[in-house]
Length: 185
Image (spheres, rainbow, N blue to C red):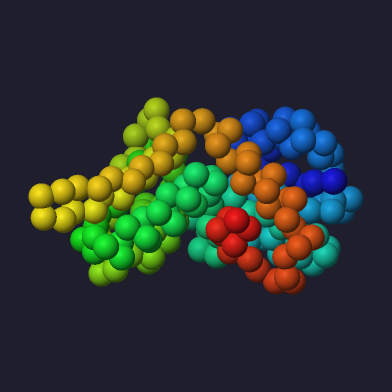
């Protein structure tokens, strides 16, 4: 498939571009694309998506911090599902999310989405430090016990399976906005 990749100059793009080409996709300009993939910034993504939609090009967005998007690695989506199930039995929870210091949003979109799936109003603790990529744990406390569900992404390659899955399922999705990888699983 011909893909317009926005964000190819950044760290994610340096991983994603070769992965897309390795999966048989061709990187092209937006006017020639059958789909657009965006991993830019919250300030840039909306204009990129509008331009793609005006050109009739479906979009896959992995930009974090953009309100309508839900980034995610496949394992992070599974972590959120497991946390929602655990929350039915252990309703007291807190979320700790850790990302690299360049990540602009705190708490992350994944942490916010996880919190919305849990009972009560769990606190979210955000950490931004060099050396991190994307990490989240949900701690459930009960009398005499603690359950921890944790997901760690150690490199940006963790984003590739989700993007490839979204591109594979693109033709099956209804017109309009589909939020989150969980809708594809």
